[in-house]
Length: 94
Image (tube, rainbow, N blue to C red):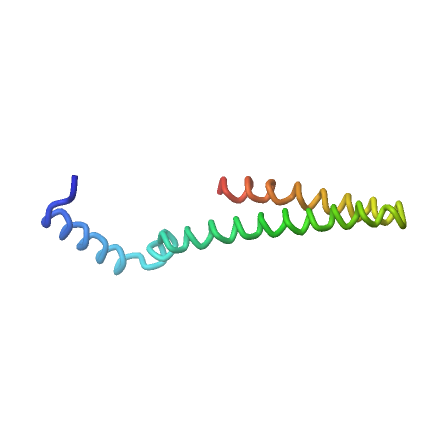
């Protein structure tokens, strides 16, 4: 059910009063800031996961030449792949 003109006018008055009274809160509680934070969290998560996948594959290929080095690289890649979802879950809850 849409708001009436009077209700819209009242909401605009409340918004302008809030902007004047507490601009820091208004800036902190903005929807744009929340959306930017969500995009940043998703980008970091995807980057960690993809970098981990590349390291894992590189490590597996490298084990043919040098077992210990390839195993370390693959373990690092696996750790990065696990860090992505962990980072996502911890940041998303805040």
